[in-house]
Image (cartoon, rainbow, N blue to C red; front, top):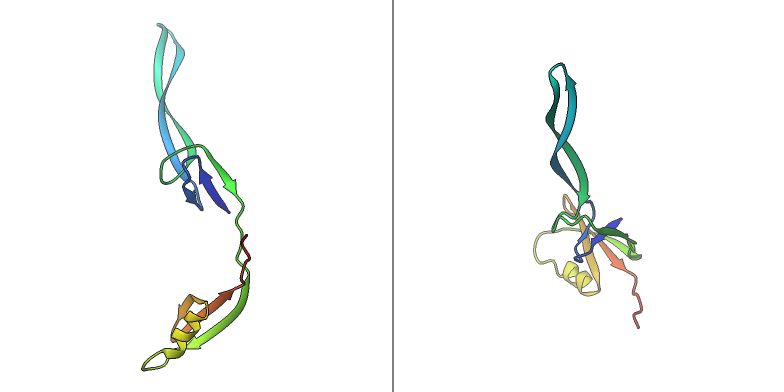
Length: 110
């Protein structure tokens, strides 16, 4: 799930902002009414970049994976890996001596 603020910033999780307000309250004492101030914390969700409280949820479109390839690293030149990257594969994860590659489906744009 992604969020977009009114300034155009995209983010995954809103930040929390805490505001301290002074709350005036009158208490009955035996010597009359006296004002008493207590801090009250108000928490709100905001954009992490510009601190705007105005943001909306935007639909997240997951890319469709066409092909997955696991490439084992060897010593020397990695010409096969270079060829796979030239074919449109993207490295999605690295683990030990393996690269996990994915090729996304082509989307037609008009």
